[in-house]
Amino acid sequence: MKKSVLSVFLVLSMTAGTALADSDNPMFAPNAQNAIALYGAQGTGPGTLFKLVDPFLWEFEPMTMAMLQYSQPMTFFRLPARMNFNLVQNVAYGDDHELAFFAIGVSWDVVLVHWRGLYIGLGVGPYMRDSRDDYVNSRLVFGERFFIGKNIGDAWRIELFTQHFSNGDFTDINRGFNFFGLAVSYSF
Image (tube, rainbow, N blue to C red; front, side, top):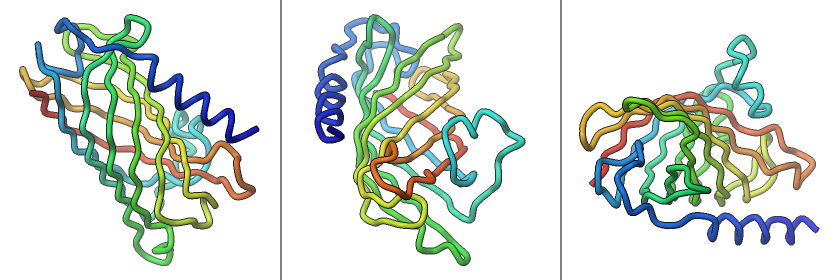
């Protein structure tokens, strides 16, 4: 059952978007068809994505995430969106060094609101990790992202984001990883 749900999710995700022909995507420069972004984030503890909404529940964890992302514009039900290829490196330090992992994944981000260069959106996608640990006992995880971005030039954007990785309770151990950070994007 879990494999069939995952298969349906992946097929729908890959076929849901179409190429964005005009320049109304706030995550890209006018007429740009590519973007490269660098994400940096601090671990904010295990738990669910809803924990990220309440800043009083944050507990900083000894881990830092860096992510390199390549994107192309698309639409999702006529909303501006982007499809992404991601390389993720989580570096854990201190006594929790076993929480470090490298992951590769694809994701899709959708802008829900945009006005005068400011945009707010959500993203989701599957990732394959190189390890199992005490937070998530599977190599396959799903990443959920909430972001607020701002155009700071024709080709440059910055985003404040929260990122959550978990496996959707496919295994008994699924505490999840949460991160809060900043991204810089260049579109061309």
